[in-house]
Length: 71
Image (cartoon, rainbow, N blue to C red; front, side, top):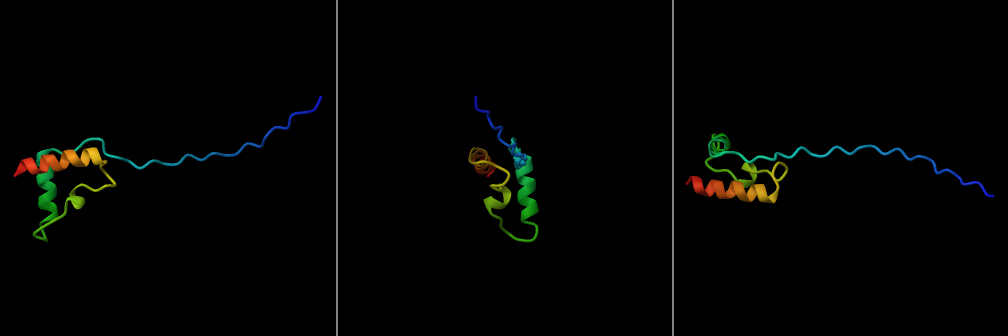
């Protein structure tokens, strides 16, 4: 009989996942964000308020819809 060679173990290091906010801001929080971003400038962008690093497309769509409903 031939012997079976054991494969060397390969260390697997965990990859940290980015922290994603699962809740969307309330209307009051949106207004606070807009006020904060427009303190020094008269305008801001939706991307500044709703960063792609924090929100997925579904959350961004809800925030955009809520934002339109504020005015």
